[in-house]
Length: 462
Ligand SMILES: *Cc1c(COP(=O)(O)O)cnc(C)c1O
Image (cartoon, rainbow, N blue to C red; front, top):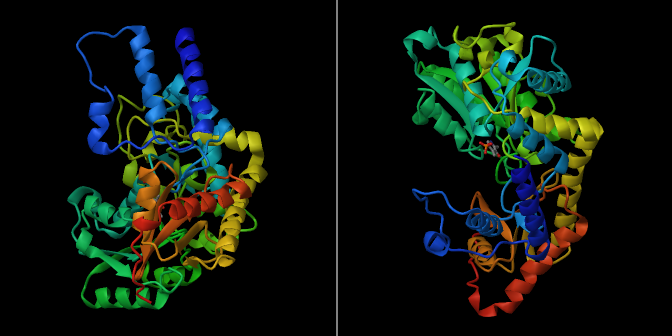
């Protein structure tokens, strides 16, 4: 193992050097990948040198998500304290179902979940779990909502025609999860949004009334804290009032921006969060841990047990339920995603986490400022969002993003809202500085200037 760790160190050093020199990996068309690199598997073992050589090639060819040129998705950067925790989790290889198998690591997860529940304003009736991503924590919330509403649904299956409500701007996991839950994709009602991308509560109210009239069973409302494209926050108090009135489970999908929970300056964006039934957020997005680390917090933890507990005497052989979190999990064997969050939190403190969140909003303000002061840009996003959406010189966003990628300049994506398509710059890497954001625009502008013939100006739909 010592030799392998030395090799790891060598490979890591190679990667760090390369990231400095080439923040974007050389573009490789997907159709050429398997011809360019030998990823094939053989019957025989290979020589150590060949093994190391292929590992080096693989590392240097992979997209670099930790550099200041990666703005493509809702994660980025590399927090060393969190990486350390994740490396240790791999080394220890505990499975997070029982105290017997994971011991002190159960305490690590428990402390994180309890602390987050306290920050939600909840008491000891609350609880939570960590799962393999926001799609899954959202799924678990939907299952609890279904099991609470459905008559004997756990044993007899879904009997009623249930309905789910979410905004048109919400994440695609909602319809997928509705299908997995036996509720059905056609039973999802997409509520329109205002000009900032927030769900319109009166239209939610109308949709529920309509379904009740038809004899359907409204089961869950999914509000979003940070929509995937614009980073918009739904109005939780207004939505909650409607849910209370009709006894509907309210889940808040904060996968993207729910981590504002950690910031005194931005917590107001999820005002009213203490009143919801469940809340999910991805520490691997705003908090910046390695993938993946998604938390699900539930105001009344009995629903977690009701939906996910199962007797299994081959597994649960010692200790109370509280120390056997397999009883509140969708999975059986479960990776330790808690430790990376804990090592980060332990080392920087809650204040340090707050600093990470605030920094992202500062960087977004830098970007918006730049756009507002340069007339070649059209801006589509608002303050209180770390998704900064814009177009440059009316160049079609998808063309610009794709060419930046194919020329190994920048990794950035595009999005759409209403009739507009635009570049979406996500300032989620808190290790970036103001200069990195300004450099992003410089690289983009230089690239456009150097390739004048390439651009087909889009006709504006305004
Ligand atoms: C990213 C995201 C998800 C999905 O999270 P994964 O961890 O990628 O499964 C869900 N909802 C929103 C709003 C997101 O931004």
